[in-house]
Image (tube, rainbow, N blue to C red; front, side):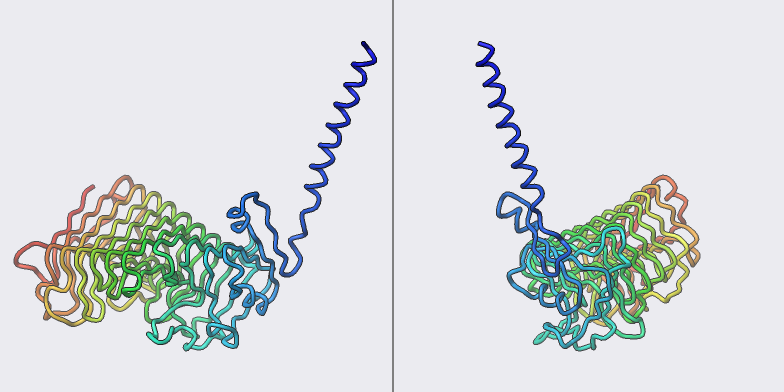
Amino acid sequence: MKKNLLSIAIIFFTVLSATILFYSCQKGIEPSPQQEGAVITTAASSNAENQSKKIYVSNVSKLYAEINNPENTSSTIVLAPGIYMLSPIYPKAGRLELLHNMSLMGQPGHPEEVVIDATELPLSSFTIPPSNNRTGVIRIGDGSNSIEWITFQNDPAHTIRSLIQTDLVVTPTAQIRVAHCIIRGGSIGLSIINSNPAANGRILEANIEDNEITNNTIPRFVAGIQIQNSMGVTGSTIRISLKGNYLHGNGNGIVAFNGSCNECRISIKSITDRIEDNGCGLALFGGHNLAGGSATGNEIQFEADGTTIRSNPGVPAPFETFIPGGVFAVAGKVAAPGVPGLVNNNTLKIIFRGCPIDGNIGDHQINAYGAYSLIPSLIPAGSSNTNEIYLHGVSKQATVNAINSFPIEPAGTNTVNVYR
């Protein structure tokens, strides 16, 4: 009997030891991630495997080769420390256009170690033939794209439109993430956009977190982050989560508008962002005419918790039609010549909770309008534009200049209401 028990125990421990050895060996065969061009997959299912594929590069030629290789969809390109000076000798006039579900990753914890520089790209690199639509240095928006831990820069004496732009309209819904990056030296740092009829009905969702966005002062847009449905698009939606970003030294910190479009929506949630030392901190336009086009039935909702909008001194100069200072908020705005009634039935709703809004240039911290026109002949600018502002906690201390319509609208359908 004792002999049989001893035999069983020996067999059990032999099987257990073999199992432990098998898994130990399996863990030890993972390839080194430092090899140039190495591809690593770790997931069991084929879909998860594609999502986790990593490609390691260490020079600009390899970066262009991998980002333009159609076999690299659903991959993450990991950049070694260094300066990647972009050049028009490469495909797509030197722009970097992320493929479907592709991501760019720098060095976690150290965005300053990986620098993508656009200073040597000519103006021709930022137009897309045959339409000649203006675009950015980095183009994203095809499926799910993310960019993390990288510095994007340009010499402000060298004109570009935007450093990152979401105008790759390929899928009807796009998810983007830009996190832990430094973005500096453009006309627009980060351009989040649905533009032209090709983007009709498109849903764009963005997660923008822990970025430093600064020194975006090139005329004409001068914006750290610009968010827009524009130029004839209909029924498109942008939903954005902002968290822990620091926007400073830009002509405008954040600008959002529905421009010359109809029935479009923008929803923005801001948590603990810092908007400081810009020409204008925050500019929001529910409906905005561009180049004489109309804007009807659009909506923006901006909701902020713990975000600071302070010490925006009007320098650098904001866009020429903006009021400098803390917040410039208009339900229906007209800035281009045309006929009366260009902006109608647009809505702007703003909620500030525990947001310090102080120390900004001007007599008031918030300049709010139901309708606003810079063209004196347009009386009124439009009708039934509604602006609502809710101030909670410390935000109640912000002074507000609230004007229903400028110029005056005799019918009184344009309104602005402030709730404390």
